[in-house]
Image (cartoon, rainbow, N blue to C red; front, top):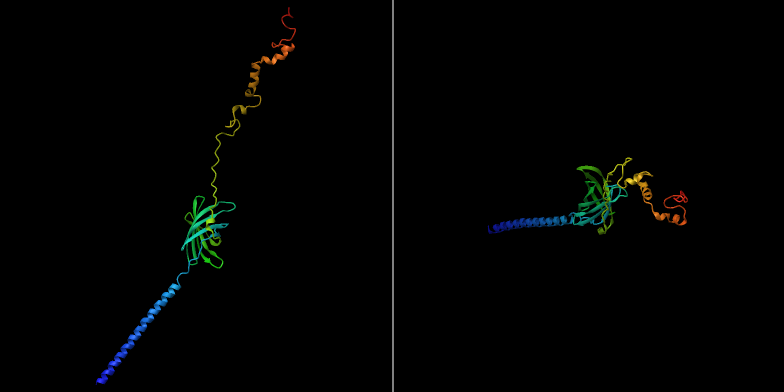
Length: 243
């Protein structure tokens, strides 16, 4: 009887040890799986953001290239842009955006004429040729005015060499003339005497004044030579000749 009891206890203990071992193994397996999953999650995290702190030449938005200087802090992008065509209106702009892995989102906002124009760029950074390619759309006056594709290629790593475009302000409107150009009207740069015809009273005044005031010194030669006198009476016709 005692022997049977000992055998039964041994079987129970053996059975309990087997169940506990299996539970322990299951626990260890679960812990290993969790650790492995954590390692895989860390290894498969979002890729490192692309380094985009350069001066870029962006084509597709305008007929000519738009020059953009990007600065980067983590995933945040910010900077300046400019457009300087050979002819037409130049502009300067502010740039903000973000980089997540190889995805690049940018917004370029410029004051053109008297309206704000924003360009939204959604692109992908290609590490093979160091370029950003994607699509864009323009918004002006609350409406999408243009859609298309763009490409940006970095041209200079020194963003400090970027300089804004020179904007020439429009000149003031020409002032209307305060005088009429009709014949007979006097301009502000002319005096009445300048408009009088040749031989007019204004031009005849010097001659009239000269005849009015006779300078006797001009008759000195005639007095000394005896040819006439200041009274304009010919010689030989004085009072003695009439006696």
